[in-house]
Amino acid sequence: MTELTVKNHNRNAAGLTYIYPVISRRSGGLSIGINFNTNNACNWRCVYCQVPNLDLGAAPELDFELLETELTFFLQDVLHGDFYNRFAMDPELRIIKDIAISGNGEPTSVKGFAKAIELIIRVTEQAKIPDPFHYVLITNGSLIHHSDVQDGLKLFNQYNGQVWFKLDSATDEGRNLINHSALSLQKHTENLLISARLCSTWLQTCMLQVKLGPSLVNMTEQEAYLALLQRVSEKVTLQGIMLYSLARESLQPEANMIASVTEKQLNDFAGRICQLGLKVKVSL
Ligand code: SF4
Image (cartoon, rainbow, N blue to C red; front, side, top):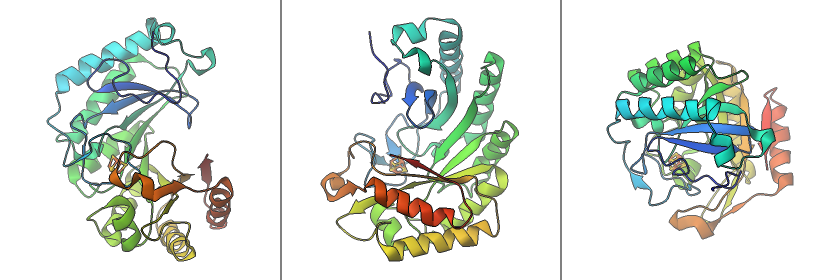
């Protein structure tokens, strides 16, 4: 018997290609993860990334038929089968909190993203998951300028989906260092505006110490981040900011060059963000 705990984020836990269960410490129940990036490929390389053997690239061709079969089966197993017993899940956590499109790379890089979103929503709505439950897209936000991704977000919005959009630094230097992103801050900000106009958008921000250069522990980085939030908030509504530090060990070469921040550092920075009138959820 496999025990499914908040520490077990093994994407193979259910023995499926695209679907993986996670007990989410953030949401307090079962999160059904959908991983398009079965090749462990992403267009970014964040220094804290926990994807093993991370490759530069996009998600492979999606097998839509297999995704539908797996999601249908898995939802039936959780809602009407013995999934919770097989995985010895804590009774208090036997609740589906969300369907999270996330995984071992950037999910919006999959060809046919909007079609995949349509499939996921159709199968999920047919399964009739009890409320409260919601759809989440966890993205680095770098491909939101593509029309197919925007079509997916529009559909997501019709079903009260949320986008969790990555922003770890508001300087090009910080983003190069932490995310190895080729996208300029200006383009990234434009994508954030598009996201927030199309769908409920939360920022996900990892605050960490980086021995190689600046991060959000530095005052200049904090000032740049706050100034960006201010500019963005004047144009669109952000749902808030999810602020956290390193939850698990990085699997990237920089693993020993980065470290978590303290609870006080997180809370102090959260306090500064709150002064802008934005909601902040801090995860320790
Ligand atoms: S965006 Fe996500 S999957 Fe891609 S490198 Fe960063 S943490 Fe890893």
